[in-house]
Image: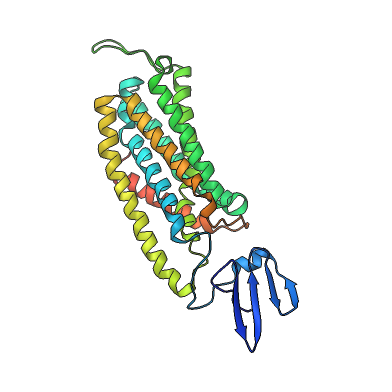
Length: 303
């Protein structure tokens, strides 16, 4: 098979006085006057020419700022919730320590296993872009529910003074809380298995010999950004929750998640978007993410 050029829009090559033309948008390879149509999916699978360049209008480094911003802001808001949530349940919802730990354990278990079916759905039907976009929107909705639970007085049990018997949360109180947890777990099923892989997809049209070096640097930067996000979350977000108020702390997390979703959608025109192909490439990523979260959970004795 003749390798495709590295410039996806249009390129010409001269060989023995003849001009070869490649038009990826329509998938047509022409030689002189004779031409034959190619399937667009086949054209996308052809490797770029060895030692070539990448001059496409989509993908590459220009798409990474939007993907990194989405991931970092989502991690800051998520880590900020997980780190201090047990304090919120005990102080504001009047739950016991055992009940709070049980609720957070179930929520964490669902969130850690949700990437497995999420990866299957993304690979077979939605594609990674749509999975990350829908997952980000679901996380945003979950943040909104938690912010409302801390802002609306009727969304949580009435406050009580020290020494008084605090009223337990009712069904309508728990509905706000559990709805937020449910949407956050649903969003984790879309974002966690696809975000890193979607960023790697942006280099799928680069020459093969350059791709491994680029992806190594990309993965290093990706995990470094997660470390920065965790540091910000356990310092700034937790400080706001404890010293300014839960409503303000959740509002900041909600605002960061809104910026995360907006930044990802704003870069839509720059992304290389692979459609679902009924394969399970993301499933291995989801399995590794779930194992990593479970190991971290076990080693620290809980959230």
